[in-house]
Length: 561
Image (cartoon, rainbow, N blue to C red; front, side, top):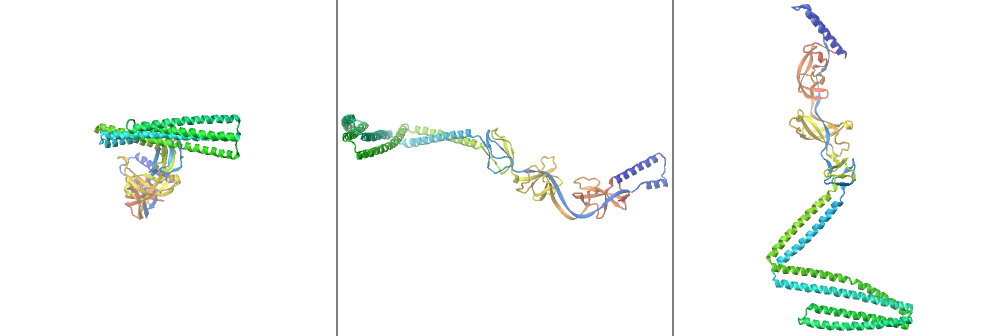
C-alpha cells in the first residue's frame, strides 16, 4: 500500500512539473531544464526474483464428474398394479434379482387358456394325422375288405356291450345275493338271541312256503329260458337267425339260473331259521350264527369290490367303439379314394396351422406373465425408488434406478492444447472435493472427440478403482496427470509475467540490468502452480521484477527493495 502511495505521489509531481512547463514558452531547452528533469525522474522501487533452475514436473489438470458406465432405469414393460417392491433405496441387488412384482392373476388365466387351446389343437392334429394314415393306407383296400373290417369291429362292440351287461348283472346279482345272505344271517341271529314266539314260528313257516314258491317259479323260468336259448342257437347255427339273438337268449338263460340259485339260497336260509325257532337256540348256535353274519358281511364287501370290473368292461366298450369308428373311416376312405386323401391332407395342414397359432398365443401369454416379474438387469445399488405397492403403473414407467458403483469412471474435459500431452494408459491422481480432498489413482481409458464441430474441449474417460464404496455418481473431481519430469528446468515466478494468460507460450518480463529495467520477450513452457518454465529469453541468475511492473517502462531506473 505504501509503495502504491509513493507511485501516486511521484505521478502527481510529474503532472505539476509538466503543467508548469506548459505555461512557459522556451524554444530551446537549457542546461538547467535538462538538469531539472534528471533530478525529477526518481528510481522506481521494485521487488525482484532470481531466474533459477529447479526440478519441475509438467502436469495437465482436468475437471469433471463421476459417471456410472452401468446405470439403468428399471421400467415396467406392461401396465398393471404393483403387488410388491422387494428393495429400497440404498440396498444392493444382484443381476436377475426380482425387484418388483405386478398383479398376475389375469396373466396366469391367459396362460391357462392358451395351454388348454394348445392341448385341444394338438389333439385335433393327432386325430387328423390318424385320418391321414387311415386314408393313405386304407385307400388300397377294396370296399369289401373295409366292409368286412367294419362288420368284425361292430361284432366286437356288441360282444363288449353284452359283456358289460352280463358283468353288471353278475356283479349286482352277487351283491344282492351277499346282502340277502347277510340279511338272513342277521335275522337268524336276532331270532336266536330273542327266542321263538308262536307267531314267529308261524311267520317263519309262511316265509318258507313263499320261498318254495319262488324257487319253483325261478326253476320254471329257467327251463323256459333254456329251451328258448337252445332253439335260437340251433337257428343261428343254420343261418336262420342272427348270432347276436342266440347270444342274448343264452344270456337270459344264465340270468334265470342265477335267479334259481338266489331263490334256493333264500329258501335254505329260511328253512334253517325255522328249524332253529322250533328247536330253540343254543349258545354254540348263536356263536355259529354270529360267524355266519361276519362271513356274510365280508361277502358283501367282496361282491361290491367286483363293481370295478364293470368300469373295466365299459372301457373295453369304448375301445371297441373307437375301432368301429376307425373301421367306418376306412370304409369311407375306400369309397372316396384319392380325393379323400387330398382332402384329409388339407385338413391336417389347417389343423397344424391352428397348433402353430396356439403355440404363438401361449408364448405371448407366457411372455406377458414373465413381464409381471420385474428383475434387475445389473448388479448394483438402488439409488432411486419411484413406486410403492398398490400403485398402478403404465408400460414404460420407471420404477427403480440402479447404479453399478463398480463401473464408475471420471468424465472430464481437456483443452485442445493439452490433449496431445496425454494418452490412453497414463496414470492420474484424482482428488474428490466431497471427500475433503481425498485422492485416488485413476487410469486414462479413452479420449473422445468434442461433442460438436465447434467445440475445442476433448472428453477424457478415466477409470477409477473398483469396489470403492466412498465414490458416488455426480461427485466433482479434479485429475492431475504428470507429463514430463525435468530436473534442471529454468523457471521464474508467474508474477514476473506482464500478462498472465493461462496456456500462453510467450510472454514479457522486466529484467534488471545495472539498476535499469529492460523489457524482454521470453518463451514459456510448463506452468506448475505459481512457477512457470522459461524455455528461451532468460539465463540462470537473471533478476526479474515480480512487484512494481505497472510503474515501469523499458529503460526506467529502479530501486530494488
